[in-house]
Amino acid sequence: MDNRPVGFFDSGLGGLTCVTSLMKELPDERIIYFGDTARTPYGSKAESTIRGFSEEIAGFLVKSGVKMIVIACNTVSATCLNHLRERFPEVPILGVIEPAARKVAATCSEKNNIGIIGTKVTITSGAYEKAIRKYNADLNIFEYACPAFVPLIEEGIIDNEIMDLMIKYYMDDFVYGNGLDTLVLGCTHYPLISGSIERIYPRLRIVNPSQIVVGDIRKVLEDGDTLADASERDNVFYASDLSENFINMIDYIFKNETAGTKVKFLNFDRRI
Ligand code: DGL
Image 1: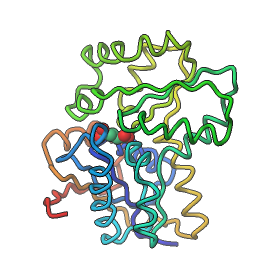
Image 2: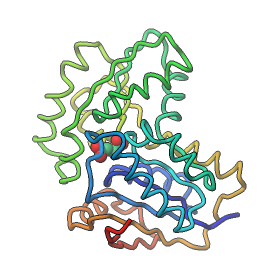
Image 3: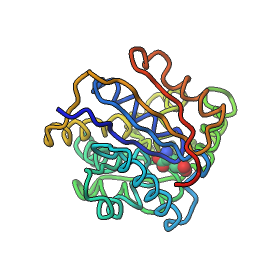
Image 4: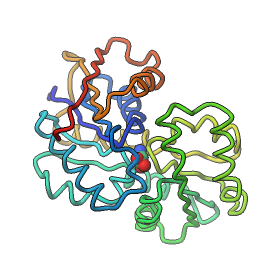
């Protein structure tokens, strides 16, 4: 039994989609979340910049006493996972891409046309395709970057006609031109618009890595005998820029799911 928190981080609020999944499946776990809202988005930045930011945040989480770190960001998972594992060997570190790739390979065949959407950095890295092909080299995989989704979602432009237009702008040709039947949401912000994507493309099977990673989190905690019991329930959400928007979006994302859980909002000064 280990009641130290699980650390999560993302460039902003997208990684909260992993947190809600964890809260559903492992409600006894405490959470420390860091959203780098002052420096979002990461997905169009240089890899060296992303690596520097990630190292600062992972270092902060380790100092805060987490028992493991979940990189709740595909962009960081695609570019920095091995680096962070080498830099912080004292805690297990999980990315979101490998678990989703395993699931795609296990549930798709050569008959499926699999689309992956993500940030420019994630798509350019080819990390999803590489990870999926490790398990099945013959699948049909198509990738596409949708860089405007993250800034819109961070602004709370989610469930409205502007987002619908943006989804169609990026995805109509991608979905219909490639005959996609499966879509991987290769950015942790995208589950926040998955309802709209499902409504616009009702025949697509949506794969959500933010949910899938929870199975791997459970396994790490079980294998290390570090699952928590329900005695301490306070979760802490840090943002490098604690805007009203971030607080509103936390309210929007968690709805009633924080019942019984104490959620604190703490501004993180910029001296990371
Ligand atoms: N949620 C991050 C991801 O999964 C968004 C990256 C960004 O800030 O552009 O890739």
